[in-house]
Length: 416
Image: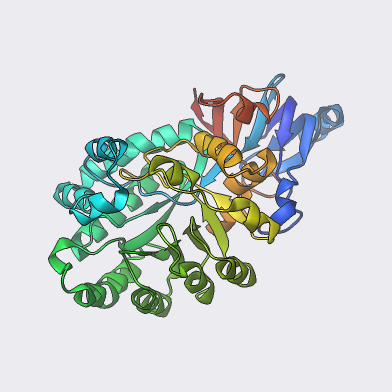
């Protein structure tokens, strides 16, 4: 079915000009069309100005035509870093942090990630799917059309596989595009607290082969940071992943500079994420490797940490993506609109840079920018209709949901 939307007050296409991602100052090139129009079936067939649609209608004979005066259309958000398949609740830990306890202190006491690990191990796959479905529905309602989901709250072969199978079920249930990542190296399970190398043996010799055999993930990730996985431990895991045909993502330099960004560059990781304490050398090496810097300002906000140096990265021509890091401990939000607000206010990004980071560059971080992340002819028709006259109002009027409708592959899948 062909659909024509016209008289769109602000049509933001994020013109990639054939590039898979936009770096540095090019992230400002969003290509807004005033009084825009877009014709699509499953894919985008034509984009232009409404003044050009009279002849287009005669030629293409669209099945339905809608006028969108006082509306804005943007590409669907690509949330390229989440942990939404889990069980349990950690609001009590959040309350403790408000009283002065640090994230690291709580983790050292056996809380943090391990609290969620206990609850997730005890949950059934049906419970995990049900819990994540609530979050996914809300993510869609706020404009997300593609999402990455990690395991990492099982930390045993049975529980990690259970999480990944839950992610697979979600992919079968929801119209949203879901990308699975194996994160067995999220923390060390309590039973291997004093024998960490044995747990790494299990990741390399049992978990990764099983994940690859069942094709349950595309990527392997590891939390490479102070108090978590060392560079040497992560390197062993990543070498195993590559051997089994899996690609690399990295939780890097969130709590301290351990040169995890350099490790990500060494393995040509698709994405190095967090990067609150990245070094100048790390920035340079990510640039050389082409690795995307995925920034998660919601996490810095939630655990009261310094923000990643977005401006320095942009000045050094890095490609930046933005994602929620939605998880039960350090950033419990699935709302990409909030992430955009945090990015422009606290990381000093422009509105245009933030939109590019949350769409095209997020798609590039998942190797999907050839099919989504921007509104260009030939790409999939994934977009949100905002009840706004300009994309700038998305940043100006913050804290509310501006999404009116969400379309994926040319079909309206949600209306608020």
